[in-house]
Image (cartoon, rainbow over all chains, first blue to last red):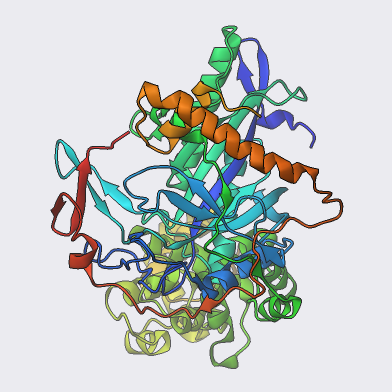
Length: 493
Length: 95
């Protein structure tokens, strides 16, 4: 990969390049856990979603959940990755109170999914490819709560044994912007596939970020792993802070120690997590409780045939089918429900309407409103049919663009389920296209302002003042083009 | 590969097994004897043989994605030395 000068970080002794790889843990969407019949649902009363298998009682044996396997295969296909028809499970041994087995069942040597690729739009004009190294299936751990007591930790095993996909990227990212865009894209793909809900606040998507720095084009530096960063914004901040820390050490003549670190969002810095260091000898070995996981190509093909349209394909279709600019298409497909919302507005009552106009309303005023109330566009009460109605009324010339904004405000605040056409009718918001009515308004303004008329004849830029007065006199409903033409004719300018 | 005393202590620590110093030499010689048995396998020619992770001639059984277990928090924490509101209570383990 070539060095891009704009991504370099300026140090006291010259430029540095940051190299980033990521391990993303994505909780699998399933009803039951990976190896038991307990509920995989988030939350619940303490230890209520726990079976004797999850609590690692003696004699209990794991039996794999077929849906979790299917979800991992779907995810692999969505990442354009190789599906390994034969994989197996290993035990990763370590002790922690939220891991009752004393080991995590994972896939070390032979993961279910091999190399793949993710296309990431870093900006409207810059697309990068991030390689996927592998995707494997493993168990999630339980949760420890530390703030209930000064001396004790409380352990809840509801999450213990829920299926996870660990998705490991290649070290292909060169800036915090690229890393953030990668995680956002990965989350979008998983949500489209319905294999992970991508909810970072609830911890169903978490990232471990590997960061190192080097001189542009030089050999790779020693990396540090920042564990469990739980928002896209923090991923960016953690990378920036860690890169600066490493550069400062190297420029002082020091060297980087390979270690695990934590990001502290309050202080905006990473700190060492030394206590886990000695636990790094996981002594992996094949889990004797589980047979190899064998899949048929026909099974994989069937899952592939049933995959939904993925974001890259949808974006290309939006550009080709609706003639949208790449930027608009990219914004709309970033969230599947928003893309569906857009298409529902386009297709409402099978009338033809300008896709760009629909996109402008959704990405503009509607998005601004959704943002102001902390919802996604499809979560608001505004229906695609209402947006289609507004666009149609403008296209027909029934209302002006300015009145349309008032109309949206009425739909937002007063008549939430209202039909735009009915509201326009009932409230007399129709644009006046009747030339006679506009002419009367124009004549009235001219008659009332003889001094301004004289000024306008000497200085044609005065026209704007007359247009404003006529619009005011007609409640903003006069067709602006007709007003302009009539005024010009009557004032002789 | 001979197992020395430091390795014995390390393995015991990783497995959270408490060892008295006096037990270390004895365990080292036992482990070395076991490894010597395993060494005999090195004499077998495995050229072209795929590594085997299971000797059972069957495919792995799968479970449908149905919730069939749970809601037994009383039983889950029944053997725990300390509990509160169905949580396991353990000495503080914060980073």
